[in-house]
Amino acid sequence: MQDEQNPTDAARPRTPATVETAQLIAERAATVWHDIDAALSPIIGHGGVAALYRRSLFLARASNPWLPGVQQGALDPVEFAELHAAVALQSVSDARGATEALTRTFRELLTELIGSSLTERLLKDISDPTSHSAAVQDTLP
Image (cartoon, rainbow, N blue to C red; front, top):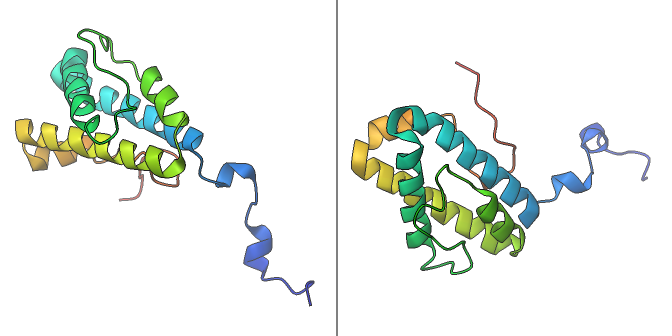
């Protein structure tokens, strides 16, 4: 019978917000990039974050030419509105792939500069922009 539903199914929210869209990926990506800027700018400055971000965009554009272009000085201070706008216009798979590539490239560049251990320590609380949860820091020990 239909009245005999699994109680956990009935409690699970069924709202449009639970459906992954390019807009949600774009919002998470912008949040994650602001978190990255906040985590790194006290150490390498906004200019350093902007330089790594511009280089990451340049490299990621090889596979995703729709990503925002890189103009000298365009991200000083760091702005992610262009990234948000570009990602939001793509298919979910393209949005996911490009944001993963951009984040991975950034982490690789940072790792080349400061090492993997320090990169992981500095960015450990920053979630993946393509994760299905909002960018939330882990508070468990």
